[in-house]
Length: 218
Image 1: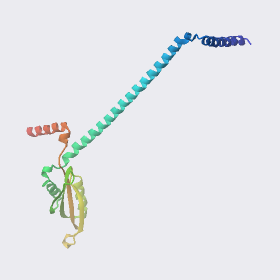
Image 2: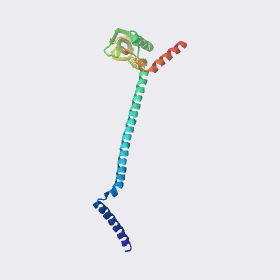
Image 3: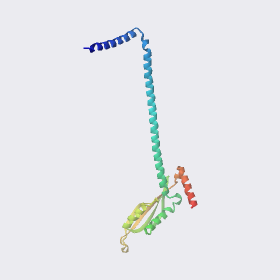
Image 4: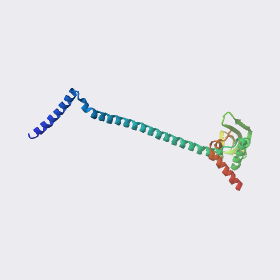
């Protein structure tokens, strides 16, 4: 029961406060609230402005971060492709030696295997591709079946780009050559019409100059 007078006092004070505000507005003395209203409005507008500016800055930062990530990805791809090109391009023969390079490689392959090759026909060329010239040469030989597997593996494992695209196998019916097979293979290689690493990468030119100097010193 002792708390009721206190509660009544608070309730009455609030009612009186609202009545005073209503009386002031009814009498047209709203100027009493203008300063407070302007202050609150100013704070509100400043908050909206700062929030908007923060959103704009945040969007700009996100755009910059995304651009940096894309640039890093592109740079990584570029360096990876450059490394592959510098690694693989030297394995392809120069176009200037396309008339004898493939034949010399084939003779070396057969010599290492202890086999006698028989070149069938002349070297054929396909120049339809704008970037490279594909050449092929048909070669015949006689070998045992198990020897053929080892022979093909030795070709595929060579660092130079020499590949076999066609194989025909015929059993040798000569009684004096039991276990032997007549094998015909089409050897292929590719000659780039232009090696582009020197034109694409400046450090490749420097690398070539350094190699030339070392060769002279030797």
